[in-house]
Image (cartoon, rainbow, N blue to C red; front, top):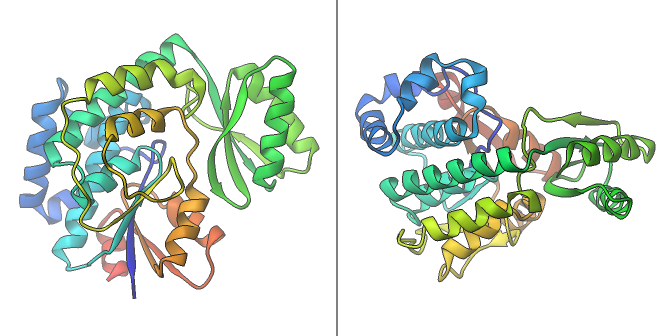
Length: 307
């Protein structure tokens, strides 16, 4: 058995997430939450436990909140003796993957998340956008539809290659609306709007990428202790010489998650454990890979089921 840990992305948050794991492993939770508390000027844990869905959906809150719960799930897995040989994250989840693999310290992980979430929220206000998940249409066809819409003067692009039958698009509200209709005309089962007010991983995030790149110049990025798979290149990352540049590019580049999963399978991974809120990635593994095991850990019940 060869196990990979996967880490949830933005949009997976929900009120009260991670509370059970924090109560079950109080010492590990305390060490994580103390760093979070020293990094942000708001009570992150209180928002996670008591905040509304709307409050948690704010980018400056949801990113550190999901990162925190992913680390709590990681701590729980480690406490139960679950070993892993590789990591990957979906978008925001790549930061928890960096913390899990030793690329980032806990302190620097939170600093990076702070800079990223603030820069992206600012860019979202300056360049409002939208996203939608196109289901039941090949990625190539989705790209073709986006190019057609762009040629007509409306910005939209394919940004998250999640599975063979799901591709997320991002762009202006007008571009998303037109592309969604064209995708359905081309045979998509549906084009589901996402609950975001920004076009993440697109050119509309370029200002965030530039601001983030400058902010993380002094953060130390180390070599990982296990195999690390990258959204930007869609395979194992081996060159960690300029991580600020790569992670800035990550903000406005497509997430090649399908390619990552296929690369992991080729490298012998047969067990995938999603750590963090929800089980979106567990579902994507099931839709992309055959003859593998995929489970998630987000609370006491799922932790016990994963053992």
